[in-house]
Length: 335
Ligand SMILES: *[C@@H]1O[C@H](CO)[C@@H](O)[C@H](O)[C@H]1NC(C)=O
Ligand SMILES: *[C@@H]1O[C@H](CO)[C@@H](O)[C@H](O)[C@H]1NC(C)=O
Ligand SMILES: *[C@@H]1O[C@H](CO)[C@@H](O)[C@H](O)[C@H]1NC(C)=O
Ligand SMILES: *[C@@H]1O[C@H](CO)[C@@H](O)[C@H](O)[C@H]1NC(C)=O
Ligand SMILES: *[C@@H]1O[C@H](CO)[C@@H](O)[C@H](O)[C@H]1NC(C)=O
Ligand SMILES: *[C@@H]1O[C@H](CO)[C@@H](O)[C@H](O)[C@H]1NC(C)=O
Image (tube, rainbow, N blue to C red; front, side, top):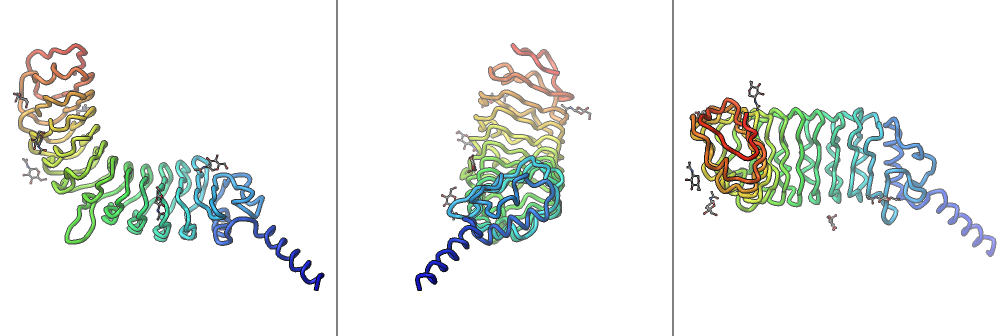
């Protein structure tokens, strides 16, 4: 009996050594990622215990993998659906692995605890899975500088904790989704401070319903798309906005007169559109540092009074803007 107990103890101790401290499923997922990727960190696979004898880029809590950070490693390959089994994962950062690509698996939407998903500067393509809308705790989503195509999934509008939304520099097309009859939309992202949708092929108007006084974004970057129609007057509700870039689209009509309600703005770029009517009156935008109104079809006007009144202004670009008369400013930068 004594020998039996000893044997049992040895057996249990042996089990603990061989399974280590890492949850078995999590360990299996990491081994499967290791199998499908080239250039994983050198100590991957050297132990059987990614949490206990930590594998580079892996952090754990209570034997569960909570962080996977493998930025700029030269990882090569695709991301399989196994990733969805890391059910305690909070941070996934695979950024700047230029040969890591393919489609994002739909069951990335199973990572219910994830708050940070960073895939900047990889080679991911295909559609952005609408299952990302299931990641209710996501606060930082950076999918920029990949090759994503198709529409921005409306489901992203359900990410009520989202602080940072960056899908810039992809090949996204279609409209900016807004909520409608119970379907979600980006107008519901009331806590999002960064809307980076720039450098895509988004089309259609900037919906009036997109902006409301319930949101307080600081960066709205929609430049370099194919957006049409007028700048919505609801833009004037975003009093905390610091950078507004709508340049390089096909926006037309006149600039809403309440644009100067945006009193926190430092950078305003409306260049290279088809805007017409009077040159916007920027009086009161006292933090303005950079303004570009070039290449629109504003009515010819004299040098606007606001131009010399805004002391923080260091650059004003109004190329082919229909300005005439003498422009006076301390830091004269007019082209
Ligand atoms: C992961 O663990 C390493 C040390 O093992 C630590 O330096 C790093 O701050 C941790 N990272 C996160 C995001 O917890
Ligand atoms: C969501 O994230 C916060 C911290 O960002 C954390 O305190 C909370 O426990 C998370 N909720 C879930 C369901 O993981
Ligand atoms: C612009 O600001 C003024 C003064 O704060 C306010 O009365 C007006 O309603 C604002 N307009 C819009 C469209 O936000
Ligand atoms: C702006 O462009 C739209 C088509 O995109 C057109 O229907 C509308 O009439 C134009 N408005 C103005 C003021 O030119
Ligand atoms: C610009 O707006 C200011 C403040 O609203 C106003 O006093 C000024 O007359 C306006 N200038 C022009 C040219 O409309
Ligand atoms: C205005 O348009 C011209 C001709 O397309 C272009 O060369 C120039 O760079 C544009 N200016 C700005 C400030 O974008």
